[in-house]
Length: 238
Image 1 (cartoon, rainbow, N blue to C red):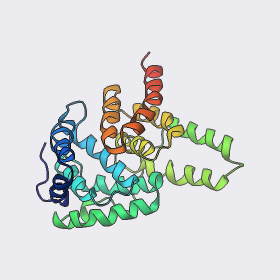
Image 2 (image 1 turned 90 degrees about the horizontal axis):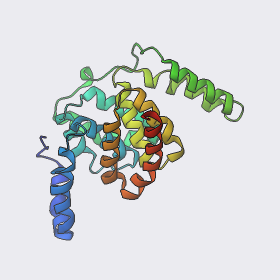
Image 3 (image 1 turned 90 degrees about the vertical axis):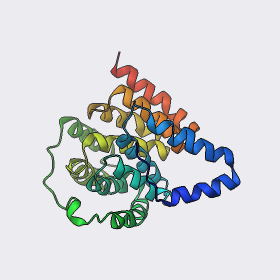
Image 4 (image 1 turned 120 degrees about the horizontal axis):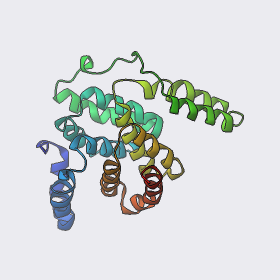
């Protein structure tokens, strides 16, 4: 895996070394030299997971380094653009706007312009039956409580965003599961793990997503998510 050589992240390692030599060693040997090289999940998929966490947690300082790494790992500029738009709905508009600001200098350094990004309006993919059923269930349970939220969920979230072809539904699932764990929205996790499996994420890949997340959301958050993921996987692969 190629690591970006010019990034504030590596400048920051000098500061880390001066304060915590152990952290610097864990970063270079365990995180970058170990975790990111594990074959169970591609560097491209790891980039989706990691960018999602950083955007969800407003970690804009390190974001440019990981955008560089994502581009070097095969994630296209248009896919990063779509990822930021996707996460506006799952981590909040402010976090997505901050991510766009942090990403722009990387795009400019690489001469990435609007011609390489998906336009605002595109021909959408067909909606799948599972999404229709989910929308019908939401309308039945919550339509009287928050009709506006249900309407936006129907028309915009599942009726538009998830159907944009610039980021595969599998990749959107990786991003959403990662964001749900990063923000501690565990009651929502099982549904999105099921959707990820439906969209092509394998059992082994989902397992490795949780390993990747442990380093970026913290061990406690990852272990809090594990029983939920375990139950979904056991139900799916009996």
